[in-house]
Image 1 (spheres, rainbow, N blue to C red):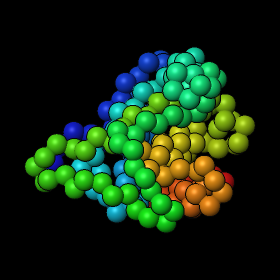
Image 2 (tube, rainbow, N blue to C red; image 1 turned 30 degrees about the vertical axis):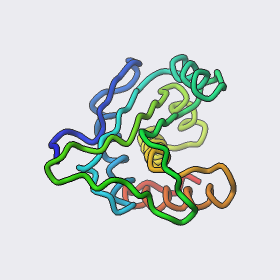
Image 3 (spheres, rainbow, N blue to C red; image 1 turned 45 degrees about the vertical axis):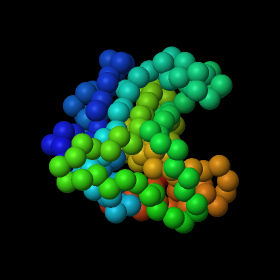
Length: 168
C-alpha cells in the first residue's frame, strides 16, 4: 500500500485554508471508508476545492444545471449498489497502488453560506459534505426516499464517529 494521503487536493479558490481542508478531507473520507469496513490506505480520492463560479460551470457541464451547488462527485467506476448492500470494490494488493475512487469538487461560498444558514460549524458542514460525496463515489445515492433514508442513516452514523451531530 502507498504512504500517500487518501485525498489529493487541488485548491483553485484562495478562500480555502489548504492545511485545514487537507485535515478535514482526509479525516472525513477516511471515516466514510472505515465506516463501511474499507481500509482507507487502499484508496485514493481527488478533491477540487473551488468557488461557486467554478462549481456552477461543472454542474452545467455534467448535470445540465448551471448553478452553484455545495459538492459534486464523479466515481471512477459505475457502481450499482442495491439498497442495503455494501460496495463491491476490487481488493487492492498490499503492495499495489491505491484504488482510485473518483473525483469530488466542493465550493467554498456555498458551503460557508449553508453552514451559516443552518447554524453549523463550517468544518462540520464540510466534513458532512465530504462523507456524503465519498458515499456517492462508492455507489450510494438518494434518488428515491428509501435510498435517501439509507444514505442519511449511514452518514449520520459515520459523522457520529467523528463527534459531529446528526446534520438532518
